[in-house]
Length: 237
Image 1 (cartoon, rainbow, N blue to C red):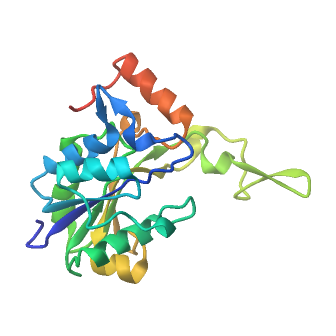
Image 2 (cartoon, one colour):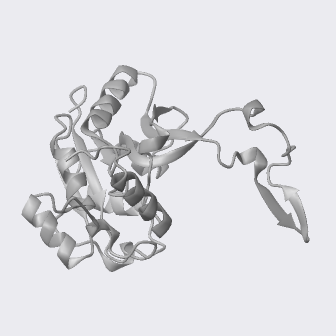
């Protein structure tokens, strides 16, 4: 709980991922990233209950074994390539009758380098700022490429995507950030009204770049395997 409000962690785990086939079952040291995500949530004293939303038989059995399953498997229309995560969350909120003043923590399986300390720090920072902020998302600094240097092709010509001068030193450009996919937190009412974790008052939770690997493509997976093989970062067991 946080200031008397319950916190529900929801872990989406679709079976038909394309970028990395069956990626939610990818194992690190013999433990799937799906199970690792559950373990992370279970170790956090702020979290009251955990749900896995999946359309997949094998993942549903894992969820039942870990006692974190929803009442039924996810409907097929919410398990397509075009299905939106927000609709998956709202479906879980609906079938589990989660109260409007509760908080939802979206935990995607694809951030295997986050830690229990990261999650505890997220809640502690948000609790201190709840009078100002409606939501919190994890971000990391982004500079390669910097948005000011991105180009587009229009009518056959190369043009600056943002309409800015691209040939400037990187050090002279303002800092920018990207979502790293580790944590998204807001209350049920905001999700229903905004259909988003982003409001006019969203708190940034800064995350180190070296632990912001997000598994979307095979290149991301190769990067993770290199990091683990060379022991550049220790993975929490």
